[in-house]
Image (tube, rainbow, N blue to C red):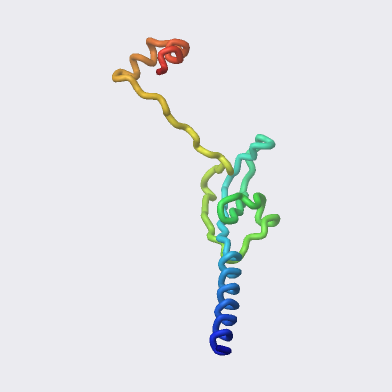
Length: 117
């Protein structure tokens, strides 16, 4: 009986330790951007790092100001301009007519709104 209790305690300790290790594992990525558009100021800033922790952006700035974990995956975008946080939400939810281009020029937005079923 004592042996069973011992194994239960040891198993519980290992399970707790393993769960804590998994909870602490967060993947980091750092984007090395050649240029970045700062939407707050409207300026284009050169040589910026964008640190992503899991999914959200955690920090943005120069290499002097952003502490990048050693394990972070580096993505080189030094030849590109980036806009952090931009989400492409463009979609077409309406049904298109057989001759969409002709309908586009023939009908006004008001006509199309009235005809929506």
